[in-house]
Image 1 (cartoon, rainbow, N blue to C red):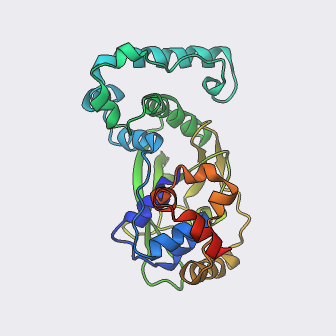
Image 2: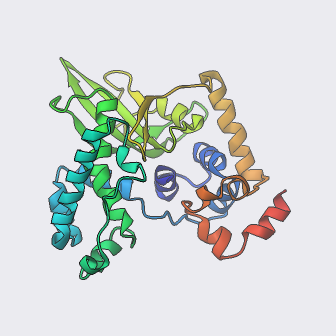
Length: 300
């Protein structure tokens, strides 16, 4: 999922056509950049991982949210799933063994779903989202914490923050959502910023910009934040491995921004990685409105 990017595109405090956002969306998909600059807002698909982290950061409990969503009749099934994952992990000391085909947990018989349709609709309408949501809360968030070397009893705080992306040639910053852990260490506070990724692939533009971000109140950080890649499937965690040099970042953003405004806008994801299109906020425009084939012909 690319929830953070689509949230930035929908953020009314971010100017449409901002060069940083234009570069980010063009790097994601040139066709998406075309739609955004033409005035179309994305409709992001529901992201159960993001929703779970957003709810977790409020300080309420998982049980409270399950009841709030309307899953109070399935609390025992959720508890059983958590116990099944814990037991499976104890017998299979590898990363996220519950993702292996042999793990049989995380299923609710159709007969037990009766009366919970409104609840699952609030989680995107897909029953699989319930267990993704629970797994993120109970396991992925803890895998990430451990990977970032944050002790459970460290007194840390987790928040979903709108951080400011800036470059010297831009007048206004871009507000961009990220996950921030504040960890007290002696008399100082360490800041750890997490960006979600898939297959541990670090997109250099987003990470390089985040490495230079400011806090939302524009005050200097008490120390330089550390940026981490958080794998949204396996729970793996890695430091940002920068390959795009700082001296090239501004030029790269300007170049991509110009391409976003002037084209070409080929549907590269549809041609190379169509699985990304299934998670794109512009899928409706490209496919359901039948624009993709004619646009592809004119752009290539």
